[in-house]
Image 1 (cartoon, rainbow, N blue to C red):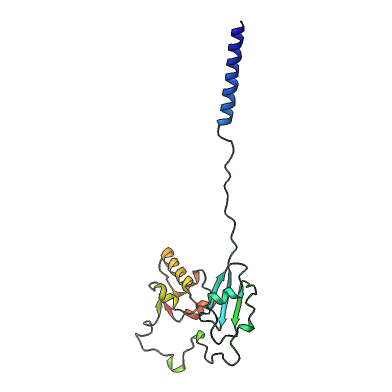
Image 2: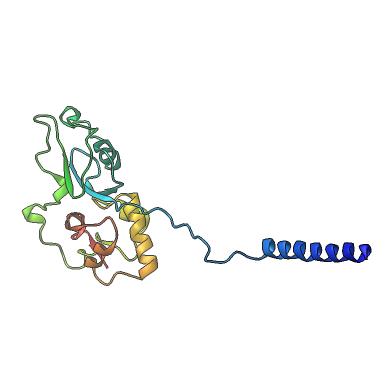
Length: 193
C-alpha cells in the first residue's frame, strides 16, 4: 500500500507539472502592441528675396533660423548687408525674408522680376517657345536654372512628374510641394508644357 501511495503521489505531481508547463508555454492572449512613428511637424515655408543668389520659396523644419534660409538661398551676395540681419532669429511660416543690400549697392534693375524692355515684348513667330523650359521633359539642371527653383525643388518636380504623369498645363506645377504662387509668378513666363 505504501508503494501505491508513492505511485499515486508521483502521478499527481506529474499532472501538476504538466499543467504548469501547458500554462507557461501557451500563447499570450490579447492584441500585440504596434508602435507608431512619432508625428512630424509640418514644414514652414519662407519666401527669401533680396541680396541672395537664388531667391525663392523654401521649406524648413520648425525651429529653423534666418541663417538656414540664407544658406538655402545660396548664401549672401557680396553687396549684402549682413549687419542688418539677425541670423539667429527664428523663421515663421509664411514669412517673407528680405535680405538687405548695403546702402547704395541695390541693383537698379532687379532681374528677379524678369521685366522685359519695351522693345523686347514682341517675339517673332516660331521663336517664343524655343527659349521656354518644357516642364514635362526638362532635366534636373534645366529646372534648377529657373529662378526660385533650387536642386531640391527641381527634384520634387521630377518626382511629381514620375508619380502623376505629365503636366497638362503650367498651372499644374503649383501642385508640387515647395512651389507657391510667388515662385510660380517668377517662372510662369519661362515654362511651357
